[in-house]
Length: 410
Ligand code: BGC
Image 1 (tube, helix red, strand yellow):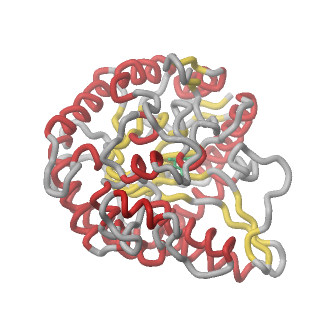
Image 2 (spheres, helix red, strand yellow; image 1 turned 30 degrees about the vertical axis):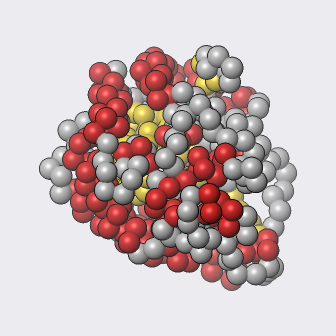
């Protein structure tokens, strides 16, 4: 299938601060990654050293043909102690956004992408209702410092993922959420207690979700009130949920908790950030193992999932759609091209049906730190040599860059 995308359709690539910058020492994950009993496969360490190499990375993506760069600003660097806002850190992110604009690339700025400042995690993280005002205050300070440079703002990356991982872990363990026992030692290392030690991807999603929704709503208003005219939205981890006969009720329950309540909370936003990687199938007993080809993450190879999640998000949230992440963890770059081509065909079908899809941002620009999995999964269009930090675009980078330049899939 071939076709043109609308004029002004945005083509971009994405990264997140902790996954590429390196040396994020005031974050909760730094402590967790460096602990002797760490749940992480390896520490993020220097990551891709983008803290120093951002100019080269922006030049690289612009040269490939992309017109947008989605990156996150790191709360732990900007507010390393509660109430202290680092002007130096804010200036750093101003330089990144300015470098984008100089390269004719739109800066899509995400205000929270998984990592918390350690002080927040130690004090209940997002389980604590104080997170609503704490995050809004951060958005006010950081947003004010960057407002004249932001093209698009995303408040929280995958605000629904604590709920998703909580349900996954509950299903695996066969019991309700419990704080991992190993967190006792982690909490102790930073002078906290296990009850309150709540990192984003390991907190109780049932407690955190109402706070995340409220924090998004409040920070949306804060960012809109700064006087800039940039669109603001939240991004959501939206996998396509399917059911085999008899699995419909379980699927629908999971859908409402993980996707539905969040999409409903986005009504009236400037856009919804759709982030899709796979399809999840439910049987009467819960999630079924993936059938057929799987990715490095163990997900079903399901490029058509994006079309399904775009359609659903547009229908429920009644807002324009921006694909803020879509991609595949694979060593086989030809599979990345196949995955992305089929995903884009789905985008074209959505557009043909009149759905307002504003752009496609691929995850990721670089092979980077894939959270608990460390550096093993390869999501990048660009390979990064871990010893030298040299960047080498893969064939998929040139291929997607050509599509971006042509604004058409041929
Ligand atoms: C996250 C990224 C992550 C990607 C691939 C998304 O859930 O926003 O940070 O690297 O998926 O797993």
